[in-house]
Image (cartoon, rainbow, N blue to C red):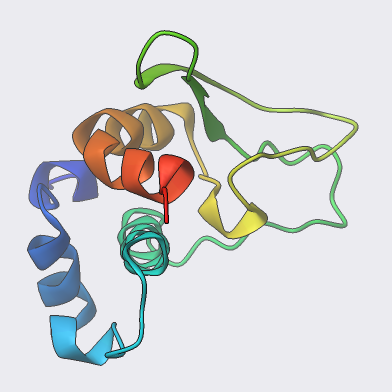
Amino acid sequence: MEKIIDKIKTFEDACKEAGITEDQVFSTTDTPDEKAFKKLKLIIKVINEGWVPDWNNLSQRKWFPWFRLSSGFGFSHSFFFYVISDSGVGSRLCFETEEKCDYVASQFLEIYEEFITFKS
């Protein structure tokens, strides 16, 4: 059976897997960082294959990427917290597994960069 991370290589792939078009994701007034956030939300929803974090379950791992911003933008690593939930990228952008987190953070690095470092 093919893994979801083998099927989703682009935002367009995520739209196709979700059964929607790009026009259904964005509005005409979206700024570039809003478009990037919407792209990430959809990509992550598709990659997580229906998994939704249970924020009342402190022993459920919720993976999220960590980026370094000091000398350019790059994916650093993934991690999780057992006791607290602390994320600089938003709770909607977490993953069920480290593998999925690492894949999306690396494959879609440009979208994360546009979301996190947008300058108006």
